[in-house]
Each structure stands twice: as structure tokens, then as C-alpha cells.
Length: 192
Image (tube, rainbow, N blue to C red; front, side, top):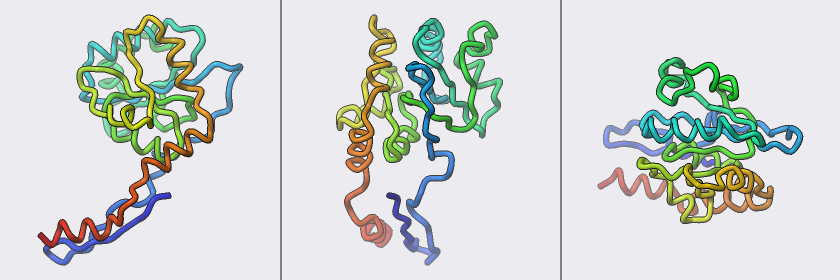
């Protein structure tokens, strides 16, 4: 699925471009638990804290979903939890905090490049409408669901977005793959 290419920069140094994502981007298959979808929210350091906190508050009250908050391994855990309001023990106990990707029916974010990587690996993705939303092209291209965090039907919309068929996920992954020869393109750019 992923192609590794090598190009040479102006100093004649060999550079690897592309390739298979690290193990961080390989999503384990989810064992479904009693029909309750597992929704994973990615930590995004530049996402607006107040909007993320409100969204987490709403998800924390939902009874028909399992919640996972995916923290980043390169940042202090306590800072991430504080940023999104999961430093509150009563709220945090309703969430699974994960440093690695765990199986999920739907992964949510507003701008993370991980969303693109997950689409390529056949994972259902939802793009949150937030003031920092930059991954809306995934929605426009039919590769992800649009999730409005303040929707009056949010729980139903999350459940619906999590129920993507394997055939549709494979179709999305194939559509996102680059169809041009990246090595030729990069060589052309570097030779200018």
C-alpha cells in the first residue's frame, strides 16, 4: 500500500520519502463489545482547548459509546489531560487513556495528519468542526464523516459514522493513495 522512494537533494544526499507508516499508524482490529462503538479522540496540541473540553464533556455523558483519548507519546501526559479537561478524575474515569493506537470504530480529530494515515489503513475517520479544522478536505472528498460537536443528535451521528462497511473503508483507502510517481515529482522539484 505504501511506497518508499529515495531522492537526492542539492548536496547529493539520499533522502527517503514516503514508505509504510510506523507501527504507530497500524490500527489493531477491534473486538466489538456488545454493540457499543468505540470512539477514539486524538490529542491535537493546537486544537482550541475550550471547544475540545466542551466536546469531551458531551462525550463523557453518552451511555451508548466507549470512549478512548489517544495521547501523544512525545508530550507530557499530565499537560495533555489538563489541556482537554481530562485532569478531572470524575470525568477521566469514563475514558480509556491510550498512548498507543487501540482498535476503534471511529477516530476523531480536526487537523491531525494521523487522520490521513488512518484513512489509508482502512479506519473510519470523523473530522470535528472546530475553529482549527484543517482536515475538511477528507470530508469534501468523501473519505471521512463530518462531525459537529454541538449537534443535538451527536450520539446518533457518532454511532452512524462508526458503522462504515469494510468495503467502503477499503474504497476510501484506495482513493487516498497517491496515483502519481512521487519519485519523479520530487526529483523534478529538487532539481529546480
